[in-house]
Image 1 (spheres, one colour):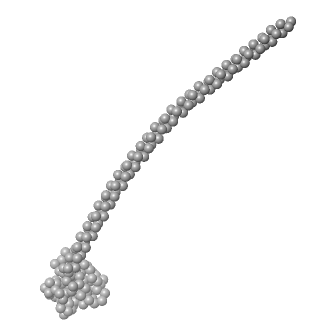
Image 2 (cartoon, helix red, strand yellow):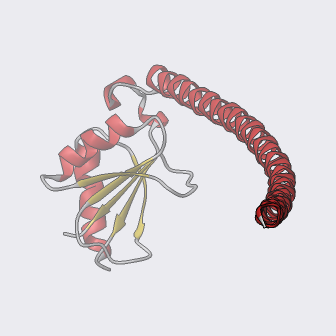
Image 3 (cartoon, helix red, strand yellow):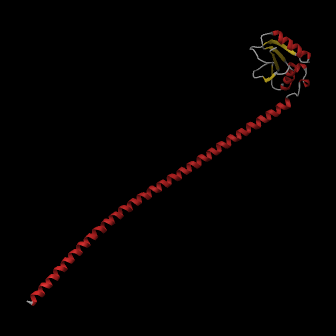
Length: 201
């Protein structure tokens, strides 16, 4: 009887050991499956990281290329602006030279010119030729030589003296002879006369 209980106890121990071994095997298998899953996930993440690195590298290269293009555009713009500035400076210098030449060539007043050097035409700006003749006589009395008296092609609202290049000061003196409020304007059309005086009186 005693040996029977011992046998039963030994059997129980064996069965318990078998059960524990089975549980351990199941646990090992489960853990092994998890390890495989983690390894697979790690492999996938590694692959994705590699793709991200490649994408980042492409972005960096595109940014570098864009920077090079911007620098090239900036250089071209700088060259263009510099060229325009040089042209403007050249134009200004040329204009200054022209003004200096005009100043040297232009007489200071009508007194410095001979009577034949100033060609004057008197026009009526109101349609009354008599007023133009009266002005021509006044200018002649002041020492100016009027070479022609005629009608203006259009009506004027004020006395006006037009002058060609180099005769500005002469026009100012003639305007003073005509009277206050007389306008002085440069000739903007071709004419054989140096001075054209228009009266509205």
